[in-house]
Image: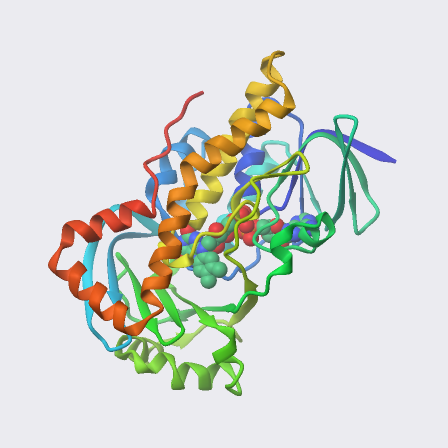
Length: 377
Ligand SMILES: Cc1cc2nc3c(=O)[nH]c(=O)nc-3n(C[C@H](O)[C@H](O)[C@H](O)COP(=O)(O)OP(=O)(O)OC[C@H]3O[C@@H](n4cnc5c(N)ncnc54)[C@H](O)[C@@H]3O)c2cc1C
């Protein structure tokens, strides 16, 4: 039996959850399919830029009761131990994905969105409709599909997306810790072949999350010895890791993290969040981009349903245009920064320049972030 829905959202991370909230609030019948039941941990630095706050508030969402850490400052250090401190132009908050995604999911349930825990394995577009199948053999027919299935999914392979062909040398490791760390600070400490983000989340927990080069990592017998041999070379990381106690039984890891270009629209599916593109984590803007792309896709779907003159083709073109206009510069800045900071000599030089020119640092941070999200409807 085929289940009919107006909008089907594939993936319930921040992008999918936000879009489902927005579209349900605008009167659509929305179904969201997520493969893992909530709550669940995710490999993420868990620092969210405040640019999303006006939009979340318009959606009727406030995370205040979850007591996020309020983050106003950035510390940045090189492998050799030179460092700089700066205030963040907009600031942000620290909240684990474990509580944040679950909070949004509970909100979806309260508002009557259908949520199904299953894995989508097929999406076909035919005669202006989408036919979607899941691992549990559920079949859906939808007028619109939003692709919110994250940075890399088996569905990307089924769809035949090009970026799945390229190998990525990055892996990431994350765990929560108990330890002393200023709750208003996000630190970005570099080490050979990667960088590590540190900041508080709710309940005074410390998130330590790093991106590393897999080709280097694989030569070590385990995470512990990699950290001691490589991360400890940065004195800040050595102190923090030695003085903190891991709360997780084992750290979470993911590999094949890919920063290749993708398509914001693929086979008529509007892609949102990491499914459209992943910004280098050192920018701390991936979650804000996920939420922002959910907003623009939702707004366009609303316009499409209200205006008889807007064809699907025009809507898709408009989404691509808006998406590129908002995010392409940030993605490019992220690529440049990541390249600059992957070379220890250039890293040292850049740190020296940025310390002497605080205005340049503030401009660099702004280049990787957006403005507070305005509400158009
Ligand atoms: C190491 C690292 C550190 C980061 N740190 C930060 C940070 O500090 N700040 C920041 O803003 N950003 C950070 N990011 C980026 C941020 O994590 C992402 O941009 C954000 O999670 C994107 O949200 P999303 O909803 O697009 O994807 P996700 O949160 O990944 O959600 C996708 C969902 O889709 C589901 N799914 C996948 N396939 C299917 C399927 N076939 N069927 C059904 N469901 C499916 C998955 O289970 C998942 O829940 C970091 C990224 C990395 C790699």
